[in-house]
Amino acid sequence: MLPQDMLALGTKRSAIRELFEYGKLRKAQVGEDKVYDFSLGNPSIPAPKDVDDAIKELVDGGNSVLLHGYSSAQGDANVRKTIADYLNKTHGTSFSPDNLYMTCGAAASLCISLRALLLPGEEVIAFAPFFPEYVVFVEGQGGKVKVVPPTASFQPDLEAFEKAINKNTKAVIINSPNNPSGVVYSEDTIKAIAEILEKKSKELGREIFIIADEPYRELVYDADTKVPYITKYYRNTIVCYSYSKSLSLPGERIGYILVPDEVCESKSIYACVCGAGRALGYVCAPTMFQQVVAKCCGKTGDISAYKKNRDLILGGLSEIGYECVKPDGAFYLFVKALEDDANAFCEKAKAHDLLIVSGDGFFCPGYVRISYCVSEKTIRDSMPAFKALFDEYNK
Ligand code: PLP
Image (cartoon, rainbow, N blue to C red; front, side, top):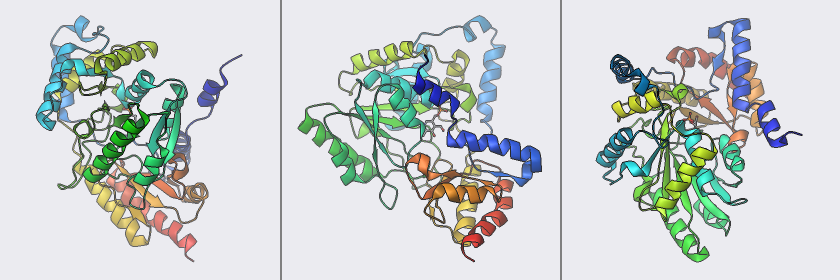
């Protein structure tokens, strides 16, 4: 007998992966440039030159045994110090290396943090729309996801949020800039979430944590877009960071968990993070890339390409007549489907070789996600197909 939940997860691909695999087959049939693949959030800009320089410097440094060897389970102490110093300089905080645990990207950060916090059956609130893997991560660690719907502007519905908190609530995940809407939660939203959590924690006599899932923190496109640093607004905040998107390094699996001293029982929670890292087999994040990211603190690829893509696709689709949510960050555009059933709409889009993802999987039916981390040419070439799809509904 095998565990049926794992069998189900392993045999059924996510809708996004399914579409991506379909796209590969379809491209082989009709040609790469005839398929407009907006399915995956795979960075399309190269890593900054600093990454290559850092790799060369490390490889030429001559100490390959150390470079490729195990680090401490929680990550190299000098790397953690460099990252803590960078965060303190950027956000005016006072973190130390002992607040940081190096991990294999945001996915590992989330699984470890959830395993470190959750008792069986406890609930984790997620604001729709959200990254579908949250359900896998939370349920995989014995918890349950409670979904809170968005408001019309795709900020969280705060009234519904307050109602959703109960004696089983352990944490709420905040992902801003958001996958799939591209929305950045305003400072007022973060303050309001913090106030509600303070009030409900007192009322219920239990600590409730924010898990800030931040792989898109640096990907914002306008000077007036600020991404509040949540540890400064709510003390029980654990940050799950990843370099997958900011440095275009998703295949290298590198990121960190931050447990600030202000978090209640922070030393014990950090110990639980270390324990969960062990239990889940995530000790010692890739050693060479720990060193690389330490050398590249504060760097990003040339994100002006994403801004250009955002403006191009937002402008193009709005002009055709699509209703779009303006993305302030990340590299996703959330668009109202042209019929209530977003899955059916995506199937019709597929007939035009437009590969877009239904909002149903993101707990936001009636919408679709378009990943614009593609070439500018793909966006330009796809416009006639988007127009033909629109016309099909507006004969
Ligand atoms: N969280 C969100 C919101 C994401 O969009 C992703 C990846 O797309 C992840 C977590 C996982 O990121 P990583 O590749 O760093 O594990």
